[in-house]
Length: 304
Image (cartoon, rainbow, N blue to C red; front, top):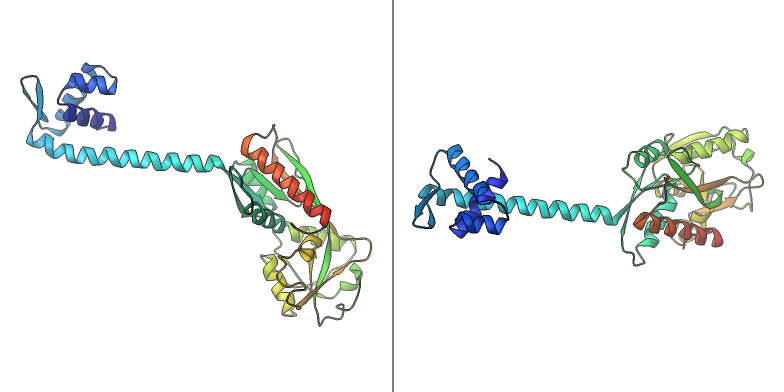
């Protein structure tokens, strides 16, 4: 039994004529007749009785009509739902953020404006971010490394320094700057080892010959700042975060202080990465938005 058969049957029942049903459905009358006959044989009952030129439903036909109508309505509702979801997916740009602070701040700023598309964001480490982009599960990636390859292209959108984040009771709190070597032996709160920030932090520390004690691994900038506020260790914070009004603890609550490093500075570069080929439509619009957002953050060294 197929939906097509149910449609032919229901249309025949409503018009009481195979000829009118064929005209309404734009199929041949013989196709309608063969379908109704095949359906009746499959069910083992007579569905119609002919009264002159009019087709009347039998008792079995009337019972079957009720169920067939419900099935066709359910199928139509399901198709509309799937079409709606498909249209929403086509209107949504999926952003995967390894540089989560940039991605989340960009999303916050995006929501303050009018756009003809939606922007969804998901966090992920470098491996997951690249896999989702190449696998078609993300449209744009915000990364901490240049992931340009045969399939992808990375555009630098922001470069800022890392500051040292300390509790205001810490011995460095009154300093105007601090060197990387001075933090040797300090308890460091850092991102998870699978996180791109961890890789970046520790490559900077390794180049400086510094091997601090790891106090804790955290999964978000908020958790990191909270642990520093609780005086459980020190950490790094990007300059744009330290200067932004959305920083949760810096300056506003008085628990933490961000201190710049002496030269050589600890820096990061944020990239937007997308699959090669001229981006079009909503993806191009989203790329333009992210590049402009990065330009504004770079210009003021704070997120807009």
